Image (cartoon, rainbow, N blue to C red; front, side, top):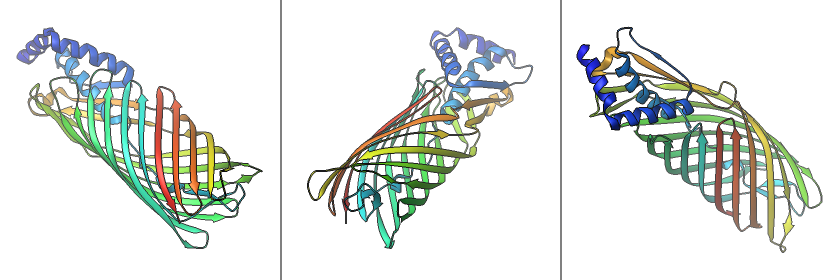
Length: 353
């Protein structure tokens, strides 16, 4: 153990590694908010402290911004007749979207392309589905980074009953990330899987030239990440990050205000703005990591990452479509909370039958 302590003191005197430790400490203070470590009493403090910072950064990176499944086919709306009541029809669509999320100093970017459609299977009952693929980039202020690929899919069942809309959907997502955290040249690969269900109820209040549509989404999302190993020439053996599994519940009430502008007999413009909130009880996650190989006796490390329990939401969009014809739709989304900001933009093309 004397040689291990001497090596640790030398490592901390080495300027490049010392700068990494200081940077990691700053990121740790911003990114985690709640961190605890468990170590044997005899472990050299300098060695453990230096390596533990790298461990916690990795674990925090794995915990922050874990994606949940998306439910894009929930909405394929058109006006019923010449009024402002929203209904549904048969359509196919393609959408390109991007999202940027910043949480406690960590930035997560995604770019996804999706295709989907829906079909009326019996009067006022619709079945839809979608599939998407894209890329994801994650980085914190200290240089820890991750890149990966994203795949998701969903199916939905809708029923339109006068001014009412009732819908239920199931969705899945899969993300494969390559992590390159600070400290010792460590790298690793993590896979994250998500499955979820959404129930939606909405009611349309029709007025002359405009409408008001309150809605409520209830989501159940399960996230699972198997354990993975971080290894590299800077650390003998590596770091084993334990698996993670959690089921989350989200309630999102929203109110949408929209208008109708008839360009001609066939082409319709629908601008809309929606505001609301998401309530996320128990929105935190705990990650565990431990050393492997010669440093296994140094113990394990734990990182607890808390997210906001309430998010404010804003949605804005502009839909231009031709009755039984083509559609173009641009949209913007915003979610914000305590140390959390997420913005997204999308462009969709569709054909209505």
